[in-house]
Image 1 (cartoon, rainbow, N blue to C red):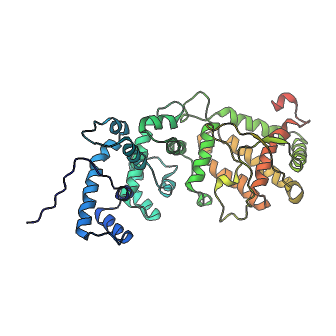
Image 2: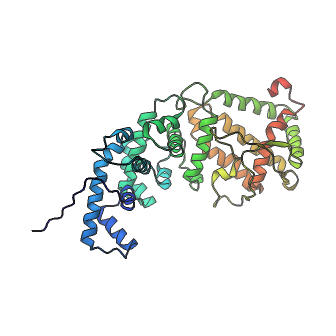
Image 3: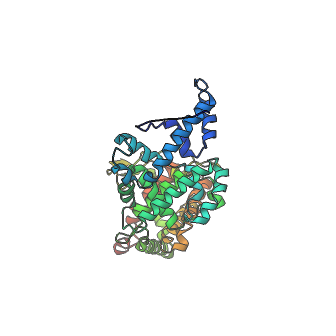
Length: 382
């Protein structure tokens, strides 16, 4: 009779097999993968399977504690004699996720129905179903903890799940998108990656949320009213839009120093079917937690002279920006904010041949140009 026995008093975590377990590979799949990846391993296939099985059993014993990271952090060493560095590593890697998986469920409610549809996510992303379910369950667990939080979701996630700030902020942004049911599945948005949504959500969350209400309750409706008022001033008052266009054209030719968080790039927007990330088409904004940027001059742009249809592009883009602002007041309109950005801002710029630098310069010039207008009174400008 043959016996396979493994006795240990200190858990040994093989990071390679830990990553395969997180990805959702079975014992057999992990053993085959490692045999192909490391052909110089001096062990029989049976011995490797026994080793993988031992590792997987340890992970399964540890998993309930990873569902409650604070419990793992305070567990007596006698139960899990792990050093603090190992505990931190296990928690952080357990809660990491694959961007392509999150892209497929972004904007959806984390319900049992969506969990049943993870087979489709698995086939589209080629991430094993067990890994997809782990990521889904992690987000559902985090959402349940922070859904009643007042303001800083990222800080709550960091405190309750012991995650690093960057990962906690990503969770917060996804919860924010799913809470407001942003539509991310339109055909025109198919090329947009998870990182793009994460970037835009961080801006919406920290800049447009209500100053006193919980961040998941409502956005600041005063901003949408301001957008309506500005639209009324510019396009209902005779000569206002033309004056603003002329002031902007003058400033674009010789811009004055103005705060710019990130030096402008010179990437050219060339096509609507193979676009670079969405946040590359928007002016870069600094994170609320980052230090204030030092003033740097806005880039000089020649669009006012080179774009023969500058007048039409100017009005289209400006109307598009204001349309995005007015959509912040109702959840039904808010659902299409990403589509609005694509159709009302990005696409017109692509059609006019604007570069990222052009768009950044244009948007950075609108506010000071508006304050210099003579057809709009001082009271109205305020």
